[in-house]
Image 1 (cartoon, rainbow, N blue to C red):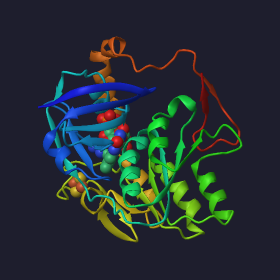
Image 2: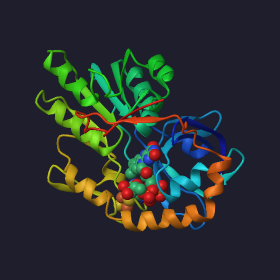
Image 3: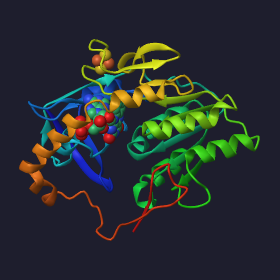
Image 4: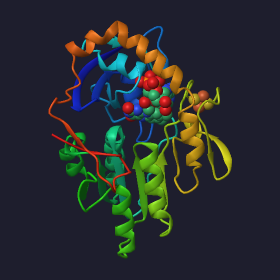
Length: 304
Ligand SMILES: Cc1cc2nc3c(=O)[nH]c(=O)nc-3n(C[C@H](O)[C@H](O)[C@H](O)COP(=O)(O)OP(=O)(O)OC[C@H]3O[C@@H](n4cnc5c(N)ncnc54)[C@H](O)[C@@H]3O)c2cc1C
Ligand code: FES
């Protein structure tokens, strides 16, 4: 059993959780992930490591509440436990002294970007961080990112600055140099940001999130096509060259179980709806969704 020692709603539907897991904390490295099973009937869900503390023996994750497993996890409180955590899994991010590095993150990807920036700074890199979100309330931990980065740019798509891919395009088109780009976030953001850096040929590393089962290279569930070859994201990744990923194939595979996932969530919610009333996900009722014509990236800007 792995005890939850801290839980915080960091943005609407987005939860930070800290677990007691001393063995994982001792060997974790930037870019790695864990696989959590919430209870004895639970599926195995991968989560990027958003931090760890060797002395306290704790590990951190940030997750977006999406379907059954993340909902089950979201309603747990400090003092309660999950049945199993496997990790650290995956190949750590290749961290070298690159020079000037752009770290792009959004949604739950803000979490794993923190240890990445820390590791890049320890190697002597200059780090520009670009954070993307559908509105100011969906962006969290700016203070932590600012503390670690040389410069932080916040983009909500609702003003002239556009989205993270616009930032990369403008940055590189203006003749400024970047030696490497790292991206953590949803597949769509990783795809368009990779496209934005392709013309300037800046190596762009994305952290892929295909469906995983065992997380150790045995089941084949997480296969992705990179450079025309089949790779297993759990052992060969999750980091890959964003210019070489077959994005359409990745998204198709990630969507293959949606009908079953929806059915599962409906059944779980019918029995457990009251748990979200006791532990709300802090979505203010006053939220207004503003559709913008040129805003096919995230579909809408959300403001309080
Ligand atoms: C290496 C890696 C790191 C990840 N890190 C994070 C993170 O830090 N924070 C975060 O919020 N999410 C992360 N994810 C995605 C997370 O695992 C899924 O959102 C989660 O499994 C959804 O489970 P669910 O039952 O709540 O939703 P479901 O209703 O089961 O699924 C909703 C969607 O989530 C994806 N998904 C479902 N099951 C899995 C699975 N076992 N593995 C991967 N994707 C799945 C699918 O696209 C699916 O359509 C990561 C995924 C991978 C592979
Ligand atoms: S999750 Fe089974 S091979 Fe990667």
